[in-house]
Amino acid sequence: MTEKVAKLTLGDQTFDFPVLQGSVGPDVIDIRSLYAKTGLFTYDPGFTSTAACDSSITYIDGDKGELLYRGYPIDQLAEKSSYTEVCYLLLYGELPTKAQLAEFDDLVTRHTMVHEQMHYFFRGFRRDAHPMAVMTGVVGAMAAFYHDSTDITDPQQREIASIRMIAKMPTIAAMAYKYSVGQPFVYPRNDLDYASNFLHMCFSVPAEQYEVSPEIARAMDLIFTLHADHEQNASTSTVRLSGSSDANPFACIAAGVACLWGPAHGGANEAALNMLRQIGTVERIPEFIARAKDKNDPFRLMGFGHRVYKNYDPRAKVMQETAKKVLDILGVENNPTLQVAKELERIALEDEYFVDRKLYPNVDFYSGIILNAIGFPTSMFTVLFAVARTVGWIAQWKEMIADPQKKIGRPRQLYNGSPAREYQSIDAR
Ligand code: SDX
Image (cartoon, rainbow, N blue to C red; front, side):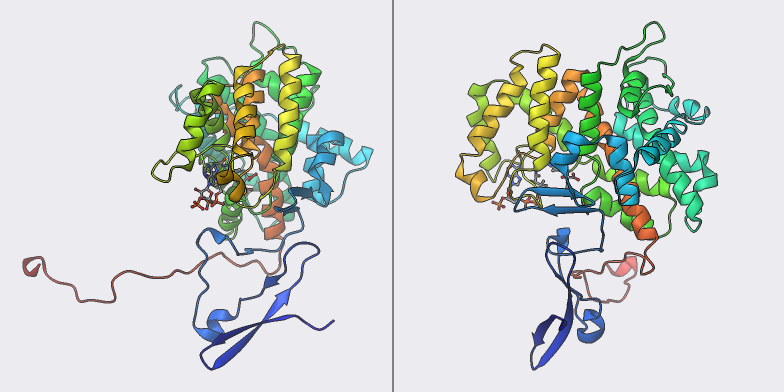
């Protein structure tokens, strides 16, 4: 098959660049030789048209509203799979057999406890610290407690660090929550599945075990699956860039946690519920729609819009259905926040401002309603996102480290500063 070529004409010169084809999705123009050939850089702040890597883990078709984990559609995995099975799929590329899944579940279960000294690490934080501030600190500190799995050149250590991250994030997240509410830490239990164990560690107290409802555990597991990976989003790109310098995996995941915290990214689930509460009633929706459209008002509809999805985020659809189920199970009839969310979505999707810009609800629009109903404070919403996304970060990090073409990420710039000039003594200024 003849190689496709992109031609760039500069003045009287024409330069050829190969066009590379993936399995599905847009082809890419390989511009690695651009600067050497032309002395020019490309310019793409925000990476709106830039493929920073090649990957075989997750594929998103923003126009169709399609999300595939290793080729499997998210709606099928949401209905038929489980979070730890999705972890196996993302990490190793194929759905596990029964025996493989049982072995993986056992391996993860046996790594859920954290080093006892970490309990003292927590004590240094103020009780009112935001749980994401605690997560950023504690996850980075894991390199100090698990130094025997930080050599990224050793595949065995990479594997152990990966399992440790996936297994210990729920424990650390639950500890961050317990610390914030002044309750003692609750140890993991090996007889519980991943989601049930997390709910147990969050909501049990020494005086009374938390009876995990199978339906609520299923909803928690589903929320983890929906958030597991999402191609080269901001936090995953942060993990990849950190990993490109051969930093240890704990430091890379801590960088991902820090990036995810931003309200434009993973912090949107906390911001979305706070926004829905601020709106309060259906009658006040038009006031906020007007603010979202007003260029002079920094207010945005949190949980709306997406860099890639220019159609409905397939995760938001599943999340909306789950919200209704969880609220029915919990007997939270006519939850005012859910009513406001549904009416806000209906109005926005009829408004030309949102329609013209293809702004739809994203994964963060409904998730907070579910998490709040289960009993989590809004400050924990992004922490749960980080727990779920850890497997995606780790899978992408492993893929990059194993890539023989790996290079340190080092973008250039369009410089607008001062040309070279001579230093002036202070008396001469
Ligand atoms: C996540 O990348 C991922 O995959 C992320 C994620 C994942 O799983 O990892 O999917 C998780 O981060 C979901 C997104 C959560 N963030 C929010 O819900 C915050 C609110 N949304 C926006 O801030 C915004 O939509 C972004 C950040 C999500 C996307 O921003 P883009 O792609 O850079 O788009 P943009 O800011 O250039 O907006 C395009 C236009 C602008 O108007 P014009 O200048 O063309 O007139 O749409 C407007 C924006 O003002 N716009 C919004 C809006 N989002 C975009 N206007 C009102 N409310 C909004 N939410």
